[in-house]
Length: 327
Ligand code: BYC
Image 1 (tube, rainbow, N blue to C red):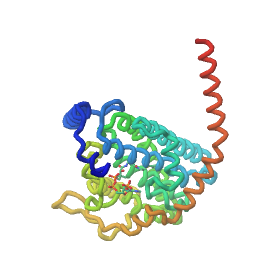
Image 2: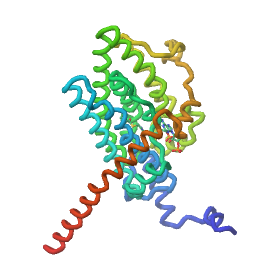
Image 3: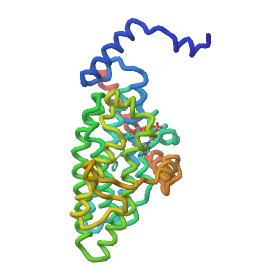
Image 4: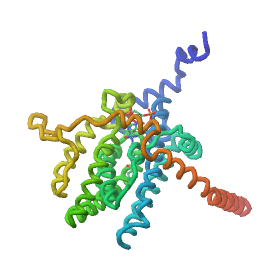
């Protein structure tokens, strides 16, 4: 019998069987799995993939907005934007820490990103062309992020869920600042209103794609929902988001670029048009407008940061040596 076939038919050890039983019970009771608990390899792998991709997205997601820090229209706007971009770095750090508790070191996760082996959210491969894009990113991108991430506060893996609580609080502030930028512009001159509308037109479709492929094409959803990692499907969350932003866009005095968008009395939801899934696939394959630029910049930043990592490692070694001497 071939080696992997033998493994496939291997009888689980007593310890494994007990671990599986305990794991199933925790999931069934809708309670939490913690790092030292036994967990199936598939659960560990799925979470490592999702949490690390989420962390990468936060870090790459700093780029489109950082691009506008030096061009923010006032000192106040500049300081708010700096704080927001800094928050995204923080989110990346909480998430890498949560991912590490699953057993893969952060350096390995980072290498996977730098070598182009790990995904990050499709949305960050679009350019931020005008100041209004800061508004559209805050309102639509952070808005979609909150919609997707609030249920993740109740995800079954403890460290991920706890990280999400703080992240969601900060994302709410981000969404408000985006809304406020768009509100100011849409109530300004005709040119400013046009700029806001143009930003919403460009970010609407990609923001809806952040929720992932349609349920029928989502290979991971079913198992992730059975494990209580995901609480709702991609389409359920996308619908929730559309229902939320339609009244908001009306309050902004702007429109959403979808001629098929209309209230469906029977469903109690808004119907909306088909998204461009070919474009989505092309972007996640690496062919979006900014994929190459985002990766180049990330690699450059990582290389430029080498001296900081070296200095931190030397400092940590010295501290450890001092402690050992005292002991
Ligand atoms: N972009 O089976 P599916 C932020 C991939 S950060 C790229 O449905 P799953 C922010 C998916 O990975 C926003 N790839 O997967 C930061 C899978 O490929 P692999 C990031 C995508 O995991 C800074 C394949 O397609 N948020 O908010 O069940 C500034 C099939 O998909 C995308 C998170 O990461 C995409 N949009 O569901 C402002 C949230 N969608 O890995 C804001 C946490 C799907 O099998 N993650 N793919 O090769 C999740 O909730 C889930 O992972 C997803 C996808 C809903 C995204």
